[in-house]
Length: 326
Image 1 (cartoon, rainbow, N blue to C red):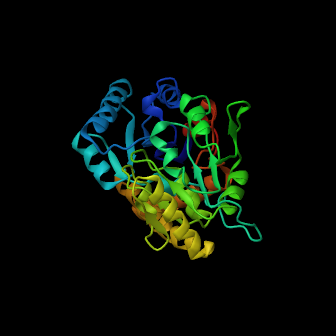
Image 2 (cartoon, rainbow, N blue to C red):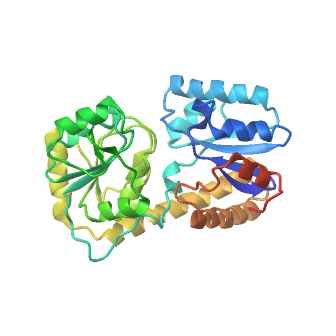
């Protein structure tokens, strides 16, 4: 969780907070019960259905009953999601969360040899559909959720792929952003293979590292920053994915071009986001957008990734109360 403003109090929460009653969000909310706090919450999964939106609405309503002085604003990843949330009474604004990915963590490196035809970075859960990449030669796989049965099954089915941080015998290990960026730079293409999820932060990481992307059609918002000049939408079958990887690999894209064009879109969206926050809280949009922009990039310079700075409840509460500077 990260305090973005003390007046008014605005706290960004990047965990899957409304879904997990044991997470730090609820502890912070309880500790700040007496203060008017504005929480900005990301969506962990698509809200593009009445059912998913209604689940979010139920949690928000429960929080409002418990903490009437708090305002919860959901950051929607797509405009259809925004409409679904608003239709069930959820306070929401459009802010595709891939703009949160730290641009300084993922970038093109010079002098790195391309060792992999493609890379797929995704948790080992079945919605990620790793098997669609089975026909891609020289495939790199980065994963997490190592203890799932799906992880072992994927490893056994795709035994010719390069699993860079997992095996059933040794388990898994987390890679640092620096290590992940190096893998991206050793790869020719980034893969996005799920049909439904949230924004998929790895899709933005690929682009910031200068990789062209092969993607399936999807719901959830990962395609918001995609550009048809260096992104190819493939059919949901192994042969189509492999063919698309071969085609993009042959294009020899300039990594800096992909990165620059992506950041052009991100910066435009950030400006709109800051202005929307100003309007949302009835404050001077110019002042708040300027202050929030400065704070945003200050946090990004200090955070590991995705705008996450303070992990301890005590630090967040102290900053929100003005006891500690932000």
